[in-house]
Image (tube, rainbow, N blue to C red):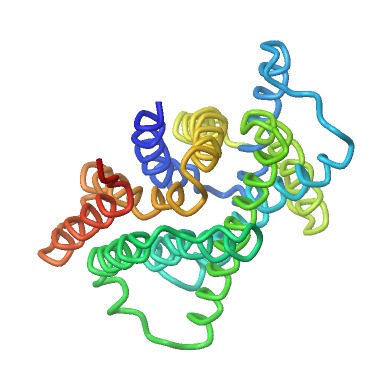
Length: 289
């Protein structure tokens, strides 16, 4: 089951990059993100309630569900959206993979969980691989105020994501399943996004094109309901550090799809980068008999 979730997550979140690109339109991206999580909340919570998957929780658990929604289903996406105005997507992907490091550090800070010795080598090879894959994007970046702002927003978004992972660990320690925490989390995340849209005075317009609707349905049903539930389940099974290594591998799926749909051109450094990531993944997940 763990292997299935791991591979499924790589495919689902790797594909979501292309779906997000297809959803870009005249509609504010923050509004589109709100539509994504609102649709996920409307479908997921009633369905899980009917199936009896929503646990009975204490009143104070809702504080953590609200934090979960803020960190995983709203604020981190806002950070990455604004960062995309200042830095290239390849650089954002590399920074996003730093969740493996943040999770290891936060796991020790909050729960005194020491990462396995092989983790540091897996992270090193994974990050080197991503740098090689996106080397052309990185080499074309000219350091300046806008670039530093973009990097800062990306790092903040990744840290929000990592803190959300820590809440997942907390929920597990209190007997709360990933389905329950995700179901409540998308509700709170949607409410937070809705309030942000109102504060910013954004227009709730909509686009009925097949591309926009298809991307919205995929991102809501597959990438959010299945994706986040599966990922948080992996956090429960593997720990936050090992589960987050998925974020180092998903750009490979994104690049494969870009090769098909966006005419991405592979280079020698990119191929070497793929091999580095494969090696890092082997190191992180290999267990001695």
